[in-house]
Image (cartoon, rainbow, N blue to C red; front, side, top):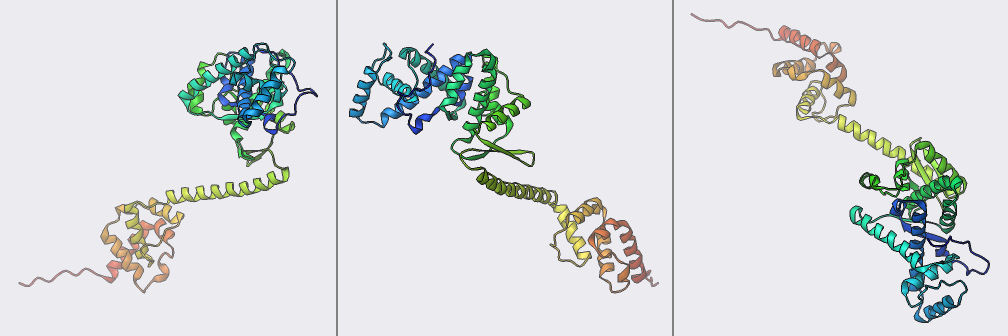
Length: 371
């Protein structure tokens, strides 16, 4: 195992802005059989990634000077091969981070094991999410991993913070659901990946319970890693890198959007419920004709409910014609129903009234037969 990472001293070169964070794939949280192996893999993978980035920004002359400084610095590992690109990248990152590199070959072995795990993981599950967290969080996790009394709690904080930051990415405000955090704290970007990979774990990890997750999130928020706010007891928003005032202003906008989406959903549901079948469309046109309305006039939701309950399919064409004549006649108008809904609610009685009116005003005469 490489030696524990040491904090930076006064003699340590100032860490570049980009070097104040470490980056690693989310699936790293599912790597290895114990936390010590996992954290050293993450640390060396992040160092290699950052070291290569630093070297890519420097010209040949700068790299030769960096090589010379690295070889002459006290505490340089005996197995450091400065002509090896990977050795130099790792040593450069360790120096920038203020870490002490004890064994280069072993550190690269940790990095390679994690890389092999990542490649196999992504070959089955697609490209993985990237986690970018403050460097000091990883350093403290490595320190605490050896302390049995505090390791469990802090490692949960490390996993949950990694899950939240991976989900947020470069965004300053994001809505995140608890189930997503629980899965990603274990190293799985989606429900599908969780179902296919979780049973293959060898470290005995289990998903966080709701009260455990709530407790960890409160600790992280108190430490000012992010701010949270829950809207309508359902949607929890996370923010970082902005002021609380801007966060609240954005939440007001999101609240309006939530209300607007809910109103649209209710309207869509109502339209779907009020959608007329071909049979109902024909019946609605006949009812509109009876009431003297345009054939295509839209029914209200209550009128539509009454239309469905009235069972008009049992009404004959002759009865429809009698109702139309009865309602279009200019006598006894005050006795007729004034709205579509009341007509439909009293449909059988209205047919009887129309039939009586028809018999009174259109009597049947027996034809005379001449002999």
